[in-house]
Image 1 (cartoon, rainbow, N blue to C red):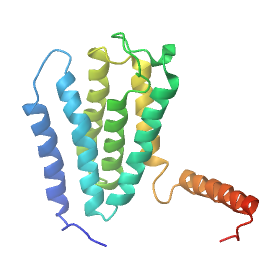
Image 2: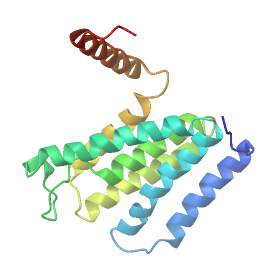
Image 3: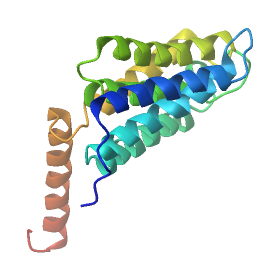
Image 4: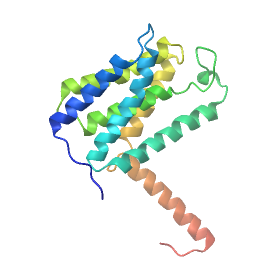
Length: 191
């Protein structure tokens, strides 16, 4: 398996802090912070993916991300014009906040896998994710409940579906049982 060259731990920390600072400083500043939030919701999961790739877990991270993205957008479509899915600015597809979900997913992964012994840096990363959610409320794209649902989905998608997570093992076992039943019903030999 291909592994990226390993940066020293100090360089990882400096890179994360430098990139987050650059995103904030180079983004257009306005009263509601929308553009900064837009850019942080891209930077956090990309930083996490880079860290996971350096740790040899890039494909597994992408699998979790695709699962999170599928649930996120599937729920927005399934809820249609339900009141919980209405945006404060009048649109639909607001539940949960996708920006917040993505930012929290990236922040959770960074905190868990990349900056384990760095409480100050963890605080910066978590604050960046919180800023994304706050910017969604202040810009009227989402209400607080849609943002909190995004926090929950992003965190669960990262934490519950890691390689050794119990939930992931239960989901895998569930689909294995379904597969066995389908093979049995079709008369196919059990694998």
